[in-house]
Amino acid sequence: MAKALSGAGLRGQVAGKTALSTVGVSGSGLTYRGYDVKDLANNCQFEEVAYLILKGKLPNQQELDAYKTKLKSMRGLPQALKDVLERIPADAHPMDVLRTGCSMLGNLEMEKDFSEQDAVTDRMLACFPSIICYWYRFSHDGVKVDVETDDDSIGAHFLHLLHGEKPNELHEQVMHVSLILYAEHEFNASTFTARVCASTLSDMHSCITGAIGSLRGPLHGGANEAAMEMIEGFTSADHAEEEMMGKLARKEKIMGFGHAIYSESDPRNEIIKGWSEKLAKDVGDEVLYPVSVRCEEVMWREKKLFCNADFFHASAYHFMGIPTKLFTPIFVMSRLTGWAAHVMEQRADNRIIRPSAEYTGEDLRAVTPIAERA
Ligand SMILES: CC(=O)SCCNC(=O)CCNC(=O)[C@H](O)C(C)(C)COP(=O)(O)OP(=O)(O)OC[C@H]1O[C@@H](n2cnc3c(N)ncnc32)[C@H](O)[C@@H]1OP(=O)(O)O
Ligand SMILES: O=C([O-])CC(=O)C(=O)O
Image 1 (cartoon, protein in one colour):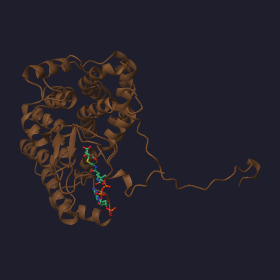
Image 2: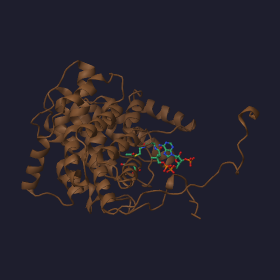
Image 3: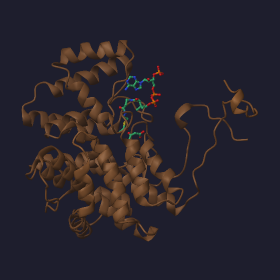
Image 4: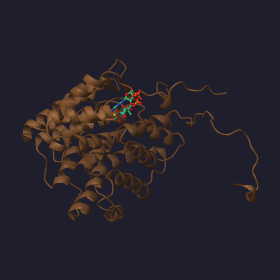
């Protein structure tokens, strides 16, 4: 008989092997294929990190140029997909739009066998910003945007489609950093979803569609959006402190804080916090950034809870003029690399993932004839 687990949520259980990342191994660190995430965020563009995660090595200049050129050439959307996006209402959640967009793409450009896994992944990486922005601009502004821009990076492509003009250097740089920070994180809930799906030998689009659904929730990727909704209600740092104390007294969960694996800090936080501060100066903000800092101080002082990757992403994205409901889709545009790499890793050494359950229901009983049932 299988042994019952001691903790809920599979916490602390090793559920498989990976060569892609380490989370919290030295207490607070994060590495992708052996590189410290801080090193990557300070020195690389997102496309270099995507290449590293998906193909196993950092590209040289020639390889990076070729990779970016290839991704650039794959930004277009088939008409049938645009037709579907045009039918999704403006009040839909953009994560649902991406989930549908990914699934529809799988119908139009099916992964016929696993030899196509690299190609379908690159295609999704190139066109997810197109999917989300095509829908957003059509449903909100009535514009059918031309999604085939010549922007140098995925982040710039996204901002260009969203705002109708090329982003400045600072914003493009922040997008590189943000996408790097979100790219990969071992056996988190959405990645585990992708791996479970992959373990049935399903197709890449199904694995990614499922992962998008898992990322959507406020306990996972949806926390950046939930954090923004909270901090934008605070008018000053003192107001934030007062409200936070009330929330803690009422034992409310504060989105953007805490982590299932890290115990003292999330190494991604100080990086995105630094960029949020730069952006705050750039836009002349005197409220949102100080409010965010005060929330961080209160949570640490009162609960020893720290900001995870999501918290300062909220203010950073806001300062770049990104609508709150598009925050989590940006996470998807990035984490797609980690998900796909995990799917490939699972496929390379697969056994169907099928744990056991501890039964807590009724003892064996006979069916009562329907006429005799209460
Ligand atoms: C990119 C990402 O996905 S990062 C995660 C994003 N999610 C969030 O920001 C949502 C808010 N945070 C949380 O809900 C949790 O911290 C999670 C889901 C991230 C981790 O959950 P767990 O591993 O179960 O948390 P953990 O076991 O450390 O919780 C310990 C205690 O702290 C409390 N706690 C943890 N996080 C928070 C929080 N953000 N606000 C208030 N209390 C919290 C828990 O309720 C628990 O209290 P209890 O023992 O009285 O029940
Ligand atoms: O690892 C987790 O549980 C959540 C997380 O931070 C991520 O997926 O980036």
